[in-house]
Image (tube, rainbow, N blue to C red):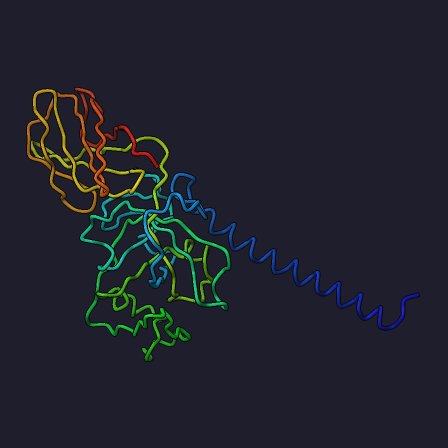
Length: 308
């Protein structure tokens, strides 16, 4: 027979085990739900420090709802269907201070939640690709952002309080210069913080991108005007210069149209096409005869890839 005190202790331990099991189940469900939106080519959790190409810096992060059309299509980088082009939901929109007029498109960032024991998920980080732009809105109130990165975020009542940034209407203000701000799909946000946190202090750093397969070139245009969308870039991820060459031409520099769409006016019909791509770290990779002589508008071709 157990003594009364032993019986109470046993009941307490049983309740404790049930509580711990419930918490583990909830966290597992949350992570499983978020994992459904990621492709193996576009997302991965913590990566070794050897892939880092920048120091940890401070910023803030918010999320947008799953029903937002930015989930799958469009974005200021011009990638179109993010799932089809291999980025999945592991993507992010950047404020002006980070976006650099689109040159940053394709770069990879590691984010981790900091300074909030209530909402941060300890020991987690998420890798995201820059695919969109969070435009400033000077007509909206911009909450103060102290050097510590701590700003009170505790309501969602449709009003703007001093130091609060949780209201959806403030997202444009949060992206005003000089704020460094990341806007994530909610599925990505939930990898590092509980969704109720809304506007969270984070740390971020540039990190090398891992990609499956080669750099992809999607050819669009008509007549003598051609636009090439460049996707799936490994290494530093962003592209600063592109050249194109037909079998009847020399190397022709292309101009950045917008995001990672590059254009040129030239007669390139009925010629195999080669590409020379230079990344922001100065490394250049050349892919010869990527597109065959009989290439067509709308087709995508694979070239060589940067080291990651």
